[in-house]
View 1: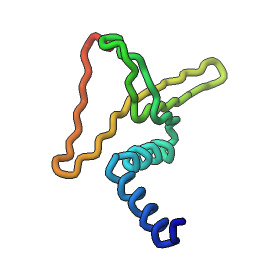
View 2: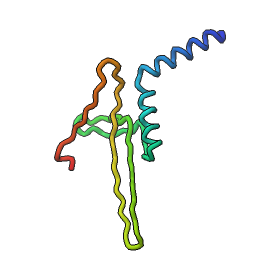
View 3: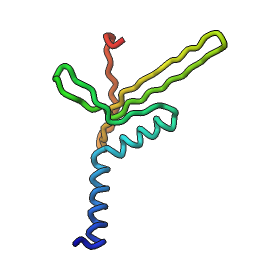
Length: 102
């Protein structure tokens, strides 16, 4: 039977391991988008048709804004697919797109 001290050590080890994975960073980013009024979906999957396998998207963030008057209404939506990496030595940001996406 484990003592309380052993259990406390196991919990401390689990917490330390979780921080190393980047999961905490993903939840922080999700919280930032949530607080700013975005709809968020974490850990979604899509089919990579080039390699025919499932891939994970860390965070999908969608923002919708509607303006209307008595005669018409316009809704504009913006969706972001966010990949979150934990880098402690060389943090950087990369953005990639091609004109064929538009």
